[in-house]
Image (cartoon, each protein chain N blue to C red):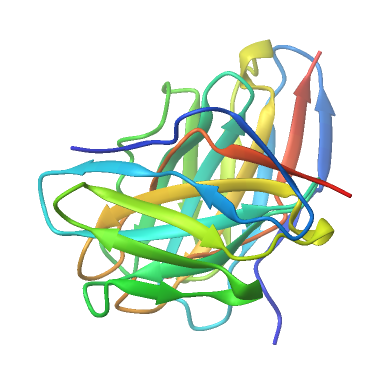
Length: 113
Length: 114
């Protein structure tokens, strides 16, 4: 079946611009996660959605970052007023098992010039 | 709080040799433990997971890992390396039970020499 998909695969933007990154989870998965992978910081948790519960935003690095999940399916991660330090690969994962087996998408590589 | 330590950033083995990638964790609650593999320009693929059942866990591509609570370790092994095993490997921990965030180690790059 279809896995987790993310778009765009690559995004180049100028400092100060806003960007939106999209994640389509595996159908029926109730949990959706965003992580960031960068050379300096490794893999970092950003935000987590579980069903209709309030999202866990504890990993968001600043108030420039926000995310929403519409209809319990597709999620959008928005970064406002991008900075060069936001350059990274943004990974989305979804899960539906009691054992927390997370399936990852291919990621969006964001470059802020 | 949870954390994962993967000592070293790079391991090189000969084709056919034993692969051993070390992972130690810290967790104040019973953990679930995972190993993921990442090939260049791809997302993460789950190799295997420990979820409080058997302590010796077998995964895909001939990999296995053993959960040792007394040593807080979850080392990944493969008896015989193949060229296709060259990739980056991440150990991760989460709280046990239902879905929760993963905390990753910094990753280890495995190179396989012909």
